[in-house]
Each structure stands twice: as structure tokens, then as C-alpha cells.
Image 1 (cartoon, rainbow, N blue to C red):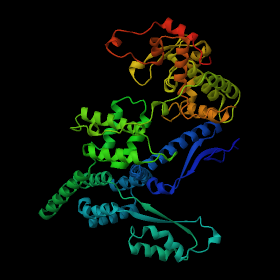
Image 2 (image 1 turned 120 degrees about the vertical axis):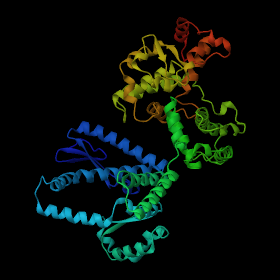
Image 3 (image 1 turned 60 degrees about the vertical axis):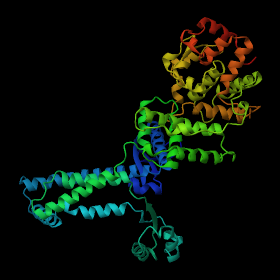
Image 4 (image 1 turned 90 degrees about the vertical axis):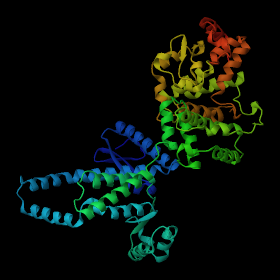
Length: 555
């Protein structure tokens, strides 16, 4: 037996399985009601695999929630999987019949079955002749519909299904399904003692409609020879022309917003890709996944006004101008890329302006910690993370403590430390290479208080904090903010004091220690303005090392 209860873990006869119910909204798309996957016969290995599958399926559910059109992709994949499984099952029988047809296998019943099938195929006619019926079915699939299924999960005490219960269940779908369909199921279900489920099936999208027409063209008009009869040939050519026009009309534009956005991400190395995707999906929900050339300046101004009028879901207050500008930053980059690639003729974001943010800078910038607060924070992380801590294994709590202490004594950005590779740390310096801009690449001297940090990095200590989440800092941020706001004896509740505040804290400490501006800029990764920056390589490393050693954020 498993030594502890693991969600979605099922043990059967000494083997472990990942078992999870598929949400009703996805059953029709995935063609399954539950995930049931073997994960091995070793408990530890099975647990790791279950965590991977859970993350994978959670990501799928989140993607469907954020982008309902993703259901179409899942449905196509489900249909392809079912078709492949059916073909695999039928392969032995198909091989047998091919042997009978070629004469290698002598089986009278099989020859009779083949002859009967040949008659049916001849009566049905070639695939191209059935194209009108297939096209009609595809056009019906472009309309919303429902599916009613029967199950045995109904409680006995509920009794037979009543007319009122059935009518209440189908009430939301009266305009979706034809009356005769609903009446047929009413006759079947009312009075029955089993349960039933009503699932709304989304209509197929334009790109799926175009794909299926293209498949019909390839299978019915591509490989098969055209008919020789004059009337049939005329009908053949007319049907082919109609299908070709429909396929072209509904084919997805290569310059749809989603397609251009993926090309933009592939072309640029975006450090904050997760944020870009979140902002992009939000805009597509507003504008639709239209060709990028159809996005106009008035449309973008309407989107700006909508955001300015929205309320923050947490505080209930209007969204700040700075936040709206931050939303437009990825959009401006996307349209600038489209213009440079000659996908569009003009950049519509250039005509979008924003009102002046009336808040003083002090209201939204990160605040530095006071020296006594740094003392309390460092004492707290030692108290809580130098010994076993609930919900954190030993490697993770030690790693989080190392990162927080390094932030306190380097002025580095959190993402810069979380992006370090083993070769980026020596006993004397930390090589910051993965940062916002190349101009911020720099060497930070190792402060005596974190002399053990380079060995931690070279030993791969950061790796235990890396998850599938693209926000590398999240594990450190989450645990640090919980300690800061809840666990410390004197919690720090000022919302502008966060994990990022260590950057300003160390900079202030360097200023108090008397470090020159040039040294402070070099440590922070701030470049010097003007043409002189091309000729000035910055202060010597030994000079920076001396000032770092004399700096203490606790004083």
C-alpha cells in the first residue's frame, strides 16, 4: 500500500495508476470520461509521474478556460486518437481480408462478406458523389448542438426521472436542439431510473471546417480518377470547384493575431513570456483572433478606455494608468514587429495615447527596507528555514534562504539570481548575464555575508526551485511574502515592501557607506547616459569589491 494519500493515485494489484475525472465540458472534446494511465510499480517514481501529469492536465484546463477556442484543438486531437485506435484494432482484420482478396487465404465466408461489401460500395458510389451529403453534415456541425448521454450514477432514492426534471435540464438548450430530438429523448428518459447528462457541443470553427473540406477534396477528388461520363464529369468538376472555394474562403489567415504573436515570440527572446501571453489573450478576448491588419487605432483606443474603466478585482478600485500602459507594452512590441516584417503597413499603437498618471512616484515604487527590518528578516529566515519547515523539503527551504540572503547583499533583481547557471558563480563574483537588457550584464562582487552562495550555485542548488511555471521567481516570492506578512514576530505589512525591495535596500546601504554613484550604478546594472558610455567600461572590479565589503544593509 502507498505510505501516504496522494491525490489521483490509484493502486491496483501492485501497480500504480493516475486516475482523474475529466471535466464534463471536455468529455466531448477528449472522447474520454476519465484519465486512467499507468505510472509504474514503484511508489516514488509513480508519485513523480503523477505530479507531472497533474501539471500537464491543469495547464490544459487553464488554457481552455483562458481560450475556449482551444477546445477545437482538443476535439481534433481526440478524434484523431480515436481514429488511430480504431484503425489499429481493425488492422489484423484488414490484413486478413486483403489476404482473402489476393487469394493467399482461402475462406468462403470471408469471400462472401467481401462480395457483399463490394455491392454496398457500388450502390453508395464513389466518395466524390457523396460530397453534397458530407458537406451538409459539416454545415450542420457549424451550428451549436447538444449531446445527451445515459449513466448509472443516479441515486436510488431519487426515483424515476420526472417530466419536470427532464424539462428543467433541457430548458437552456431549447433554441439549440430541434424539438423532435428533445421529444425523442423525453420519451426515452421520463420514467427511467438511470441518470442522464446534457452536454452542449460547440460548433466547429472556420479553420476546422476548412480542414475537413480539404480532407474531402484530397480523399474524394485528389487520388481517384475523374469519371468518364460527360454528365458525371460535369458534376464532379462543379463539386470540386465549390469545395475548393469553400476551403479557400474559410482557411485560417496566416496573419491572424495568434499566428503573428507566435512568430513574434519565436523571433525574440522574451524574458517575461508568461506576462506577454497573459496580456495577449486578454486582448484577443476583446478583439477576437482576427488578422492583425484589421486591428485599427480606434479599436485599440476602445480597448484602452475599457481598461481604464475596469475595476481591480482585488481592491475594487479603478485600474491605474501605469497598469494600463504596462498592458499595452507587449502589444506595442507585437505591432512594431509586424510593421518591421511588413505584415502591416502602419503601426496602430502609435496613435494611442494615455492620460497622465496623477499619482506621485512614491505611491507605486518599491520601498526599501529599514536597517532594523533587514535584521528582523534575516533572523526570521534563519529561524524558519535553517530547520525543517512544513510544506518545504530540505533542499527547497535551504535554497530559498540562500536566494533571499543573496538578494539582501547584492542589489540583484530576483529573476537575475534565479536565472544563474552553475558556471556563473566564482568565489569572488556573480556573473549576471540573464537580465532585462544586455546593458545590464555585469559582475557583482560576493559580499562576505554570502561567501557560501557561489558554492551553492555551482552545486546546482537553484535547480530544486525550477518548476514548469515560467515565473522562475514565484517559489521564492510566495514563501518569502508569507514569511514577511504572516510568520515574522513583527510582520511587515507595507504593500510596497516586497522581495524586490532588497534591490533598493542595498543601494541605500551603499550610499550610506559612501560608495560613489558610478560604483552604485555598476552594481545595480544601470548604464551611464550619453555617448560617454561607449568609452567607459565602468569602475575596476577591486574598487567595487571594496565598497561591497564595506556595505551592510543592517546598519
